[in-house]
Each structure stands twice: as C-alpha cells, then as structure tokens.
Image (cartoon, rainbow over all chains, first blue to last red; front, side, top):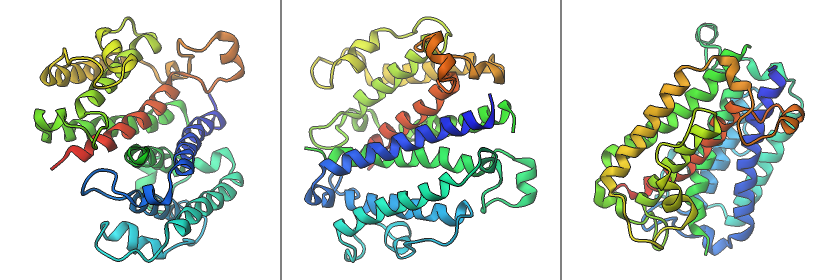
Length: 159
Length: 159
C-alpha cells in the first residue's frame, strides 16, 4: 500500500461527508435551517456556521494561508448559539460553506501524496518527530468525523 | 510513511469516537437513552442498537467470523424505530455495545499492519484488483464517521 492509496481512502471519506451535507442543505429551506435541531439545542444555522468556520480554519492549519472568513470564528466557534444577534444571513452562510470547500479543494488539488504526511502547523517539530501520525492527513480524517457528527444533528431538521 | 502509521491514524480516530460514545453513555440514564433524540425521531436506544448491530456486522465483513448478536440486525437495521415492541432492554443493549467493542478489539489486536490493506469480504477479487482502497482499513475509516454521525444525535439526549 503506498501513500497515494491512503490519501485516497481518507479523501474519499471526507468528500463523501461534504457531499452528504451538501445534499442535506439542498433540501433544507432557510426556515428549516434556522430551526433548532432539537428543542433548546443549536440551530442548523449555527452548526453550518460552525462547520464553515472549522473548514476555514483548516487553511492556516494546513499551511495554505490565512482564513478567508475570520469573522466566523467569533460568531460560530468562540460563542455559543443564541448568545448574539445573527449578523450573517442563512443565504450568505450557505455561500460561505460552498466557498470554503471550493477554496480548500483548490489547495488540496495542488498537494502531492507525500505532502499530506508532513506536519500541520499546530504541532511542534519536536512533537512531530516523536508522533509522525500528527500530520496534515490526520486533520482530514478527524475533520471528517467532526463533520459527520454535526451533519447527523442537522439531518434532524428534515421534514 | 509506512503501513503501521496509516493504521494508527485510522485507529486513533476510531478509538476516539468509541470513547466519545462510551463517555456519553456513562452520563445518560436509561430513561434519557429511551427518549427520542428530537421529537418524532429515533430514540437513543434505537441508535445504540443500530450502532451495535453495525459493529457486530464488522465481524463477518472483516473476516473475523460470525456475528455475535445476529438478532440485532432485524431490530435495529432492517426495521425502523417504533415499528416493533422493544424486546431488548436498555441495560442489555449497553452490555451488547461493550461486548461488541471488546470482541472487535480482540480481533483487531491480532492483525498485522499489512493485514488491514487486504480486501474485506464485500468486495470481489476483481473489483479489489482495480480498487485496492476498498480494503479492511477503509471499513474502519467509514465506520468512524458513521459512529460520529449518530453520536452527534445521541448527544442531544444530554440534560
């Protein structure tokens, strides 16, 4: 088994999860998206903002550059849902989600299989020497489960 | 990067997701577990049965042997929630979940890194020759996102 196949395995899984959420978003109305996934819990809107912010944060984490939507960090990561007026529309948020994936995909397409086994920017050289599994591809693997976790919740918004 | 590291990356993610659900189960009462994750949706009980049945089905899929709890297939995969009286108690279901993980872990511990890159039992030799990423480790990667998807739903049962 070579690096290329392992990268494909991790990316097939990541891409399938992005596709699952895209499909769900295509059938949810904005009104459904603004609803809470369960009484008193996060709204679909908040979770989409959260996933977009986490996606966007992968840009610096993978060494691709600055965040495209840094304003989302405060709204959808640092503070919980319902604690602040919604200053981004559901429609804008859908666009940001799509843009964050397009942006990531552009960077992903330029990577060589072996690049994925280099360290991400949140691990020190010393730690990486001891723990080489803390590489860029590991970010994709763990982000896929994070995405699936919240997609499972957002799926409850379907009629 | 060698096979051993690939396997570690995939298993660190899988084990973390099992641990997440174990932690959630340790704080949910049976009464909470029996509740629906959102109004009119699956109960936590059904989702735990579903995850246990899917876990158990990994035994034949990975070539480890027969299912340990084949009775769960009918109750938690083939038929939807609420369509049949509950014939397994929440307490038994918690035990089955733990037993399925213990059973899987015993088999996992006997695998050599390269074994994970052999074909699983649902892919033909012909297809595997063309698509070598359809291997046993790929099952672990995709099951981890499946587990996370439903754990996200079950997390809504927390007070």
